[in-house]
Image (cartoon, rainbow over all chains, first blue to last red):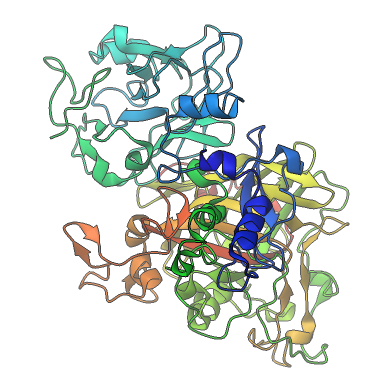
Length: 282
Length: 355
C-alpha cells in the first residue's frame, strides 16, 4: 500500500501514529506549531492554508475547500517510488492527471520538464526567445490548458484548440514567434507552438536576461515545471547561448548545478543550444 | 518556487511519523523544520517553523502598554488614531489600497531579532512624521491593492513618497541594477467576508531605499498572504495602538506593539539570490546577514566549490522545511492602512523603463 493511500487525511495519520504507539502527543512529536498555519491543497487544484490545532497534530479545514475535497500532502520520491501512472491506477481517481476531451492526461508536476531556455538569443528579443519542454511521463501529456508564466508573473495560456500534446520522451520547442525562431535556425519541426507572435515587445511572456529571469509551466496555481535560470550564468554580448537541463528530474531542474550554459551551435551559424533535442551539457 | 511537491510541506513529516513512529523514538517527527531551524536568538512570542505562517494577530510584545494619549497626533493630517491612521479612505470602494505600516518578522531569526527588526525594518517602514506617531524613514513601502470585485491583488514596493498624505504612493516599476522591480498584478484571492488568502506569487522583489537613492532589493519567492482581515470600513488591516507611544512619540516594540497586526505573509529567500543583495547598513550581503555567517572580504557568503557553505532552513527546490537548505523561510505578520496609490506618471521610478 502506498503512503498516498495510507495518508487518507492528516488527522487520520496523526491518530494512527498516536494510537499505534500508545503515547500522547507532546511537543516532541507534533507536526505543526499550535496556532500557526500551513499550506493545504484541494482536489480542484486550488490551494489554501489551515490552522494547526492546540495538539500540534491536527488541523482546521483547508481554507480553500471542504474537508472531503482536501488532498493529502503530495508524496515525494522517498515516500512513494511508484510511477505517476501506477499511482493513478492505485487510487482509481486518475491521480492528479485529469484528462480532457482529447483523452490525453494532463501532466502532474515533474511529468513535463522545462529542459532548455533561450532567454538571450543573438537575434531580436523577445521574438527570438524560446523554451524547450520534455515529456518525462511514460504516456502522452497534454499541454493545452496549461499556462506559461515568466519571472515577472506574466502569463500566457496554452490554447485548447488545436490540442497540444507531447509524446513520451519527446522534446519540443515553444517559440515566442515561430518566424523569428526559424530565422534563428531553430528547426521548424521541433516547434510545437508559439506563445507570443505579434505581441508588443513589452507584453506577453518575456524571458528576462537578469537575475529575475524565470519561466514556469503552470496548471492553475500548480507548478508543473520550471526554470529559475536568472542569475545563474553570465553571457557576454551578443548572448546567443541557451541554458540546458542536464538531469531530467523536477528536483534537479530547480538547482543551478543541474543546468549548463550551451557551448555548441546546433547548426552552422546558429546560436548555441540543442532545441528539440537532448542536452549536450558536458 | 516549485511548491508543487509539498504544498503542505509541513505535513510531510506526518508521513514520516506514520512509517517510523513504532520503529524508533528517534524517528518521531518534530514540528516541521525543527531539525534545522535556528533557535530564536532572543525571547520570542511569535515563533514559526519553516513552512508555517504565524497567526495573523500574533503580538510579539510583552503587552505592557501605557496610558495612551501621551504623543500628540494630528488626526486631521494622519487619520484617526482610534483605527489605523488611514492616509486615505477606501470606504465604499471595491478597489482598496493599502500601505503596510508594520511588518513584524517572525522568521528567519536574523531578521526577526531586535537589531534588524527595529534598526532597519521598522525604522524604514515607519513614516518620518512625528505628528503621526512615527519617527522612521518611510523608505520601505510595501503596497497592496485589493480588488474586492475581481478578488485579485496587486502588490509591490514603492519609492519614498513626497506627499504620502495627499498624492500618496505609486508602485515602483523601473529597472534597478538591471533588474526590473515592478508590482505583481492579478494575484487570485480567496475572500471569505473581509478576510482573504492569496494565491502564491512566484517572484516578488520589494525595494527598501537608502538615503543615497540605492535600494536593498528583497528577493522573495512564493509569496503568500494568509488570513488577512480588512476592517468593515475598508480602511484598516489591523489597528494602531497609541498606548505604545511615549511622550516623544517613540515606542518600545518589545514592551507594547504600536500596531495590532491582522494578516500574515510568508515566502522564502534563496541564499543565492540573497547573496546578490547588498545590505549597505551592515556591509554584508543579505545572504551573510540571514545565515549569520562570517562573510568574505566582499561581504558575501563564503563559498566552497562555487556553492554557498552556509545553510538555510528551507528548501526552495522541493518546498520542504530543511531538506536541501538552499533558502530561508520568511514569515511575518503585518498591519496596513488605507493610502492613495497614484498612477506614478510623474514619478520616474514608477513609470517603467531603465534608468
